[in-house]
Image (cartoon, rainbow, N blue to C red; front, side, top):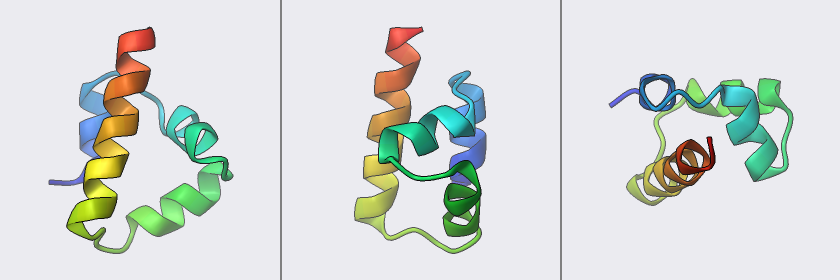
Length: 55
């Protein structure tokens, strides 16, 4: 699963995900170019789910 599409499907902009990680959006985009480990992908999805509930 492409994590960018996961965030988009939940209506969460990537800049908000980056903010939750405490990094710049460009840094997040660079990280998303590479394959995330299963643990990292789960953490990303947890953050997106949390942010989508706040909206």
